[in-house]
Length: 315
Image (cartoon, rainbow, N blue to C red; front, side, top):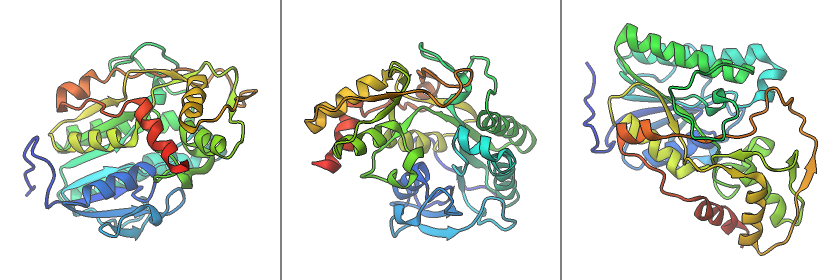
């Protein structure tokens, strides 16, 4: 019934569905996989643009809530989501429908069509503020609608695994970036702060930093993210996995690194944090031991190299 995928030998000649396939992470993944596979990317274009996709990708303007998805595939990568605290605050019902119902709808149609492999996006935001490396064994809780929706995905993934025996893995991505020279420019104010800061500073604008700039993120380059996502799909594993570098870096340090790459001397503009302190994630840091042991994945692009790639667009 199912097409066997040999562990560790790569993905080739498969039919693959990427939801949210015109978005930032989805388009990078679709382009990567389309070199040796038939890739269908679906997106309602709310947050994505088909301009991000290579011609080798079969793009279809489809919503994950639709009744007839192209789910008769070997592997589903579910990356469609409303992906920020603010989006869920403004419309929590829409957020739940897209992030939870859309996930259930996609996986259910995949199972009914014979798909036994699903990899989906969860979030590292569920850990809250953590300065030390955080493992998947930590007890997590939801403080925002966005976090609640991603935790709901993980619970439903457990159900699909237990009920149908499919292999379904959730990836808790840590602060993914690429820069406006890649597929991130369409995100605007929702882009990673590295992309936003580089764009502003390259144009002589002071980047706005919430608070005093001491907050940290575990910045992970998109190439490492897509490689990890593929490696998880190549193996018959389920559960939740962190994907990050284990190196927390402050916003102030990011400004300094971008200045160094651009040859500029632009200072940050510090402003009051509009997000309540009770829910603002001040620090993140991944312990990615679990995914490394399961797949052999380790991050390959250091932050300095990643920022060099981001800033090359402006040189």
